[in-house]
Image (cartoon, rainbow, N blue to C red; front, side, top):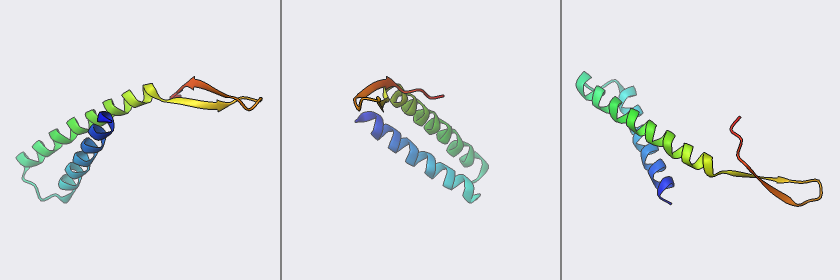
Amino acid sequence: MATKNNFEISLQKLEEAVEQLESGDLPLDQAMKVFTSGVRQAETCRKSLSKVELQVDQLLQKDDGNLQREPFDAE
């Protein structure tokens, strides 16, 4: 599944960027590059999650025991 792989890769890169920035050991210009990359990775993660959210259905059990598919409600 490409979305899962993209999400996982982007999340890993985002976590690495956060670790680098939190270390405080980067020169300012390098920190800005890492920050910019992290923002891009966060946006990629957000887009991936939005795509998945649109595909999610909840299965709700009706009173008679049957399952009814309903669209995911994010609210």
